[in-house]
Length: 92
Image (cartoon, rainbow, N blue to C red; front, side, top):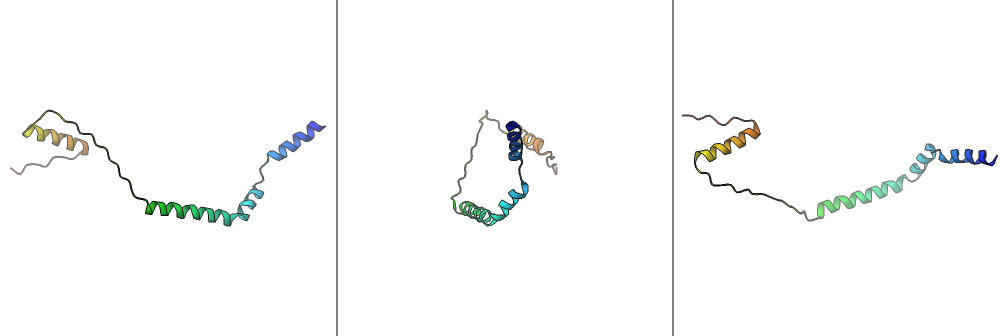
């Protein structure tokens, strides 16, 4: 008999009462609003007053020297292959 009673008590303890939960949230709504506003104000003030830190990394690859038109043609091919544009046509 005690096993049956403990089993029913355990199932009653496992049930979440949503009405009671919402009642607790509504009763403490001002505390929730105040805490949320405090952290929002602290976050916004930090974002506006903190000194911004900028960081950049660059990698430069040096290749053998290429001069004249072959170098320019290679640059045009690289630029226009990536952007799907056509190079400008010559007027002459």
